Structures are given as structure tokens and as C-alpha cells.
Amino acid sequence: MDSPDPQRRVTVVVATRNRREELLANLDRHEGPVVVVDNASTDGSADAVRAAHPRAQVVELPRNVGAVARTVGVRLARTPYVAFADDDSWWAPGALARAAAVLDAHPRLGLIAGSIAVGPEERPDPLNAVLAASPLGILPGSPGPALLGFVACGAIVRRSAFLAAGAFDDVVRFPGEEERLALDLFDAGWRLSYVPEVHAHHHPSPRRGTDDHRQAGLVRSHLLTALLRRPLRVVAREALAAACGGRPGRRGLLGALPRVPAALRARRRVSPTTEAALALLHGPGHPVPPEENP
Image 1 (tube, rainbow, N blue to C red):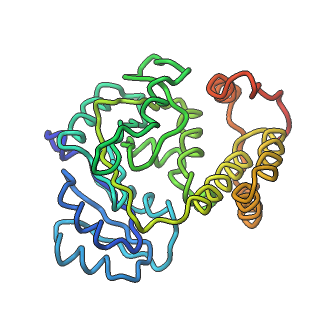
Image 2: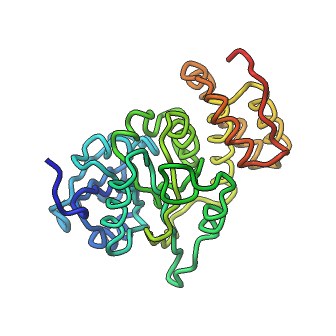
Image 3: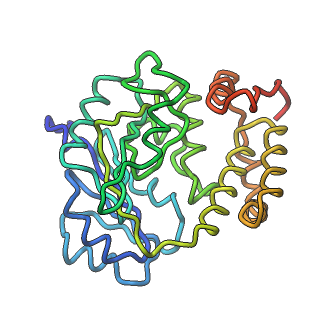
């Protein structure tokens, strides 16, 4: 039976790899049960968490599986809602209870994207304004602007909806894994909403890859998501844009190629309703493609 305390109805799943100091510094900030999924760290992160935070459940993975680590954590959660955090992020006091209340009040709401404050200066993440101005508006059964994208460390999900929509998969991996999940949640009739009253903090770790490396990863994930769910003419358009998009675009395109067979095996077109929402989201330069064979 679910706990009557909303704060105890949300599990925080923290995915980590080789950021022991940030992880240990931020774990005490989380309210409610915590599952730490370690992506094959080599810096002793898992043992350090067990020693310093014995109440946290720790899972050590034998290899780095990227965003699938979050799926592992969600499967272990025993609460109806799950909040994602990175080792360099945490949820503000009361955020989990507030999110649980919103999810309780909106049974078709599958995901909340909260507002994010960045760095010691607590600067509003530029994404906050983008989500608030979503051209999809506020759909029936939603507490805020409708979305087709989110940032994982600022998201709280309904566990059942997350798992039913396929969770984070091993085709897209990381970064940019959120897009495919957002499409599948929306396509299944779940609402995804921006709820700025639910606050997250993100102090980006200095142990991050280069901007070019991350940008190439985002291009790779975007291409694979298109191949998984979008019309083939969209895939071709995005591949051409990547090829003409400088070094990160070309690296992303090359990085996607080894995963093309897996993407084709899992390919399933989203509905015309979802394609129409994408067209509205991206503007007249991205018209809804006509129906075609997958």
C-alpha cells in the first residue's frame, strides 16, 4: 500500500559514473527513498555510497549502459512515482511532495518537467522559458504547458507510464535519450507537462565531456530517435542536416550507424496525432509528412 506521505511516494533514481565526490555531496539532499545505479565506475563510488549513505539502495552495473541505468532504478522502485537525478543535481525541499500531489490530481499525467536552477548562482536554466512557452498549450487533463521533450534530471515520472512506454532503451542510450521516451508517452495518450513550481537544482560537474562530444551525442540520439519513430523522409532530412552540420554533426551521424540495425528492428511510427503535435512544436518549416510505409 502506498504511504500516505506524498514525499514517501516518490523514489529518487540517481544514475552515476565516476563522480564520487559530487554523488556523496548531493545524496543527503534527496527526500524519500533513493536508488543509486552505478554505471561501472572505477573510482569506488558504490562502496563509498554504501559506507556514507546506508539507507540508499546501490546497484553496481558490470558495464556502462548509459541511460538504461535509470530504467534499472525505476524497475527497483516500489513507489508510484520516480524522480530522476544525476550525481550533480538534486530536488528542492518539498519538490517531491508537490509533484506527487500534482500527479495524484491528474491521472493521465505521465511526466512532470520541473524548473531547473543552474550552478551556485542558481541561474534559471534557459530551457525553463522554452518549456513555459510551449506552442502545444495546456491540454485537457494537464496542469501546465504540454511537452514533447524534457531533461531527465528535471523530470518526475509516473512509474507505470514510464515502463509501459518502453523506459530508456539501449538503442538511444545517452545523451538525448529523453526524446524517444517523450514521443512514446505522448503517443500512448499520456500528458507531459511543465510544472515550474516543482524545482530542481543542477550544478554541472567539472567532470563532463567536451561540448563537441556532447553535441555529437545529441545528434546521434536525435537521428536514432527519428529512425525509431518518424517517417523515413524525416530521417533522410535529419541525416542530411547532420552531414552538413560541421564536425559534431558528422560525428553524430557516424556514431548512429552501428545502431541502425537495432533501431530498424524496434521501428514503430508514431501516430498522425503525434506527428501533428511535432509539426506544431517545430513550426511551419517542419510540415507533417504524408503517410508512408515504415
